[in-house]
Length: 198
Image (tube, rainbow, N blue to C red; front, side, top):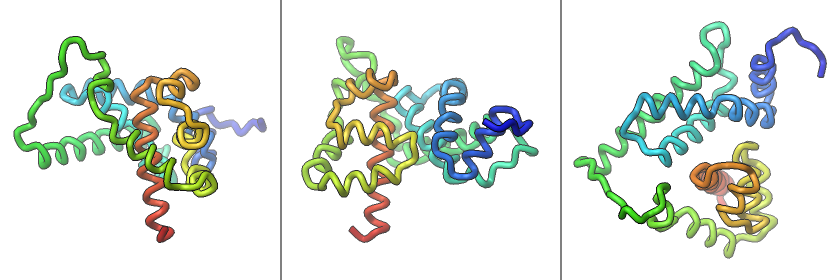
């Protein structure tokens, strides 16, 4: 790689600004643990699954807005944390409107710690329906337009037919991270379909 005189983080940011999805994935890898810790410490009432969802949505927003990032005004992690904080606040505000009494659902003690086994997986149901009703060629068309962060997981699930736990093991990711990325991938693919009128 040609030496630019920039710090590695600045090079990644510049590449991401130029539309390089791999550079943005590298920014994810470099900052995701810090961002998770920031959300967990700042918002004590948000569970791990929602933390991952907020992080994914925050990176998605950052990916769309990367051209607005000004390295002379703040560090990338500070900018990203601001996006995450606003995303978390929006999420809490929406939750307050949907569930004004903020009821808490307790799982039985013998449930797995993640809670996924006791909760119906609407994302998986929706993805299974998508697999049955859409041709592989159509799926590939939309999957290839996803940001790298979501493309690999979506391809493994929707094209290769791998299960969530297989994807998690294969990619060395947490199960809830796989589910969150697949949910976001489906939302983005639905949006693409709506935009194309299909």
